[in-house]
Length: 497
Ligand code: HEM
Image (tube, rainbow, N blue to C red):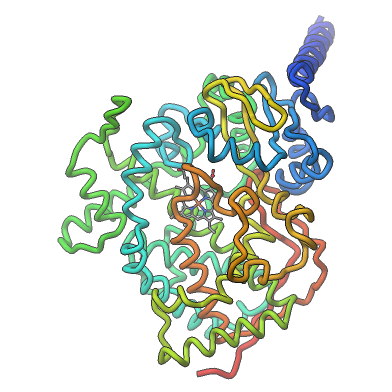
């Protein structure tokens, strides 16, 4: 009896898989779109869960195989999904047709308080939160914050000098620590005795460290929003008490100190003073509770640490592999410090053209996020291939694969900052480390300043070498990030003051 139940369940599952897979394939073939038939039910997620490596690598293989197609249908349980390969179509999805594609394709379940953030939100609630947080990143605010980034970078150098064991191996953790101190100081106004003793670093790491459970929840969210909602999956429940408590303390302390720092804490005090936030066009209302504000803080903290540290790490890695470029970088840094009496402030860092080119190329060759997602919320048509896209369709667009397309970037694996020489501007649809369109990264300008501060100060005092010169990089198993793992960077002190 038991055996027959198992057998029948197994048979029903097989039939179910067969029917769903065939429906997915038929759905796209009917629209004249090629279909990725390796796994017709789970598509790229099957590869991700059964292979080593990051999900963006599978998207890369798909891109290389189908880049002449306008888009490729992929299996995604019962939601139609499209991997957009044509740059014009990508631009339509990410930028031009915001009415149809303003949804990030990410869900959140009621009660997952920390997921109530700009990255995860959609519709009028997203618009309200984005508008309310944008004042944090104006030019005037960034100029105000820069001295804290610069101070954190100086502390990083002092710490590295005191601890030679940090000079070899994986410097990624060290760069994360610097980023944490910088974000805590610049955005949240929290200073620490040492950049290496902040409780926030552990929280930020925990929030976005991949685990099987979190990957599965994330994949379910994209494969079947209905199933995700039905199961009531929550992504950040474990962090809630500690993180909301910590941010509430930051806001309370600022109220009591009665000083103005024009940072996140000040912004929160103002928002809470003004009461309910309202989007008049839609009537959407949001009460700015400590939980809602902590949710925004969590993304700023995590985004200010992981991707920025990744770019710094990659910059050192590529400079170590390219001594001639490293030498030019040192030259610009030495000359700039000398010209400005050893002080590089906001206005000065913005004049460092070679540094800017190097950072741009580091984000071209290794963008910290490998692909972008959207969900269609209104039936529409993609221009190239005249593809009809129905509301509810999941959209995927590559970043890494595009940045490595030899038709766009000749010799894409060669680190060449001159690609970004003055006068050469890659149009948005070919260069998008921070995404594009209305949902583009809110912290793009902030990030560039923080990474520049860190890289410039470290290279003022150290030179870098990489032992492994091979460019056949392996990547960390991750559902969104791009992070090389088999790379080593060695820092060697320079003879400077
Ligand atoms: C090197 C550093 C960073 C990289 C490469 C990066 C990259 C990205 C990308 C690719 C997106 C998605 C854009 C899209 O869908 O079109 C994004 C969104 C976002 N980023 Fe960043 N980011 C970085 C740092 C930061 C920092 C420092 C902050 C805040 C302090 C931040 C806050 C956000 C937010 C809030 C969003 C969601 C925007 C929205 O949906 O409206 N990011 N970022």
